[in-house]
Amino acid sequence: MLSEIKNSLINLDIDKTLELVKKAIDQGFKPLDIINTMAEGMKVIGDMFERGEYFISDLIVASEIFKEVMKILEPLIMKEKEVMKPIGRVVIGTIEGDIHDIGKNLVATMLRVNGFEVIDLGVDVSPQKFVEAVKQYNPDIVGMSALLTSTMMNMRKVIETLEKEGLRDKVKVIIGGAPITEEFAKRIGADAYGENAIVAVDICKRLVEELKGKK
Ligand code: B1M
Image (tube, protein in one colour):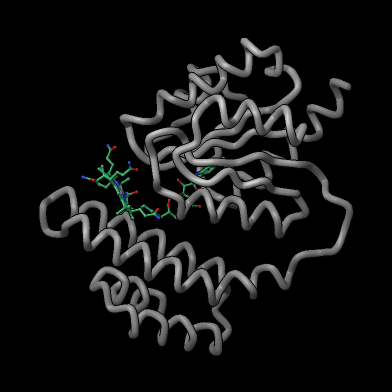
């Protein structure tokens, strides 16, 4: 079933993908397994784009399908959300120059499900906008997402701007996205790298604890 979902996404067949996703839910498949399958499919689509087999319009269709599937899955995931005092506040956004938001949205959703308050700044977020949000919302964590090798260096600019404004010690910084690595995170002075949305949640919990320990 999951491989059928992946293939129908790769074939850009929205009706079939939505039908299969609904069937999978009825059959008891977990929303997170469906999301992981969809993410694998997106990687294949990206590779096909790189090889010239798909065009930018195809990527747009693929992301629309992903978003439609998320409209079905998100309420199911949010149902699991426990009502509790937020365990931490996260300001999140896709870095300047970059408009990819599927992964960032997924991270925001998983953080919310797990008890974080999330302020989502959207896409193409400038260093200044991140800094203004830190001043306005006083978050525990700043989360940045980048999908392009040409934009990932803008993450360093955000960290530098936080330093200049004297805010760096007040927040923890987590970064993620397809081209990001642990090594890159260390190099630019981020506190952590999240490989995927689930890992990011665990890391954010740890970062909040670390921050509390400092106070
Ligand atoms: Co673009 N694109 N795209 N694209 N696109 C990639 C990233 C690319 C790898 C495709 C390829 O060539 N193989 C390539 C980048 C190459 C590079 O930089 N080396 C690329 C390119 C080149 C481009 C354009 C430049 C194409 C053009 O115009 N010629 C252009 C750039 C636009 C811009 O941003 N300025 C562009 C545009 C687009 C669309 C708009 C059409 C569309 C995005 C729509 C949208 O997001 N609303 C799109 C898509 C869909 C993709 C691919 C196919 C899929 C991305 C995706 O949604 N994946 C992508 C291929 C790929 O990634 N291999 C590609 C699914 C998502 C769940 O995964 O975002 O990785 P991901 O998130 C993961 C983890 O990375 C992590 O958790 C998530 C899952 O659990 N994570 C975090 C993400 N953020 C995190 C933050 C964290 C922690 C974890 O903490 C804060």
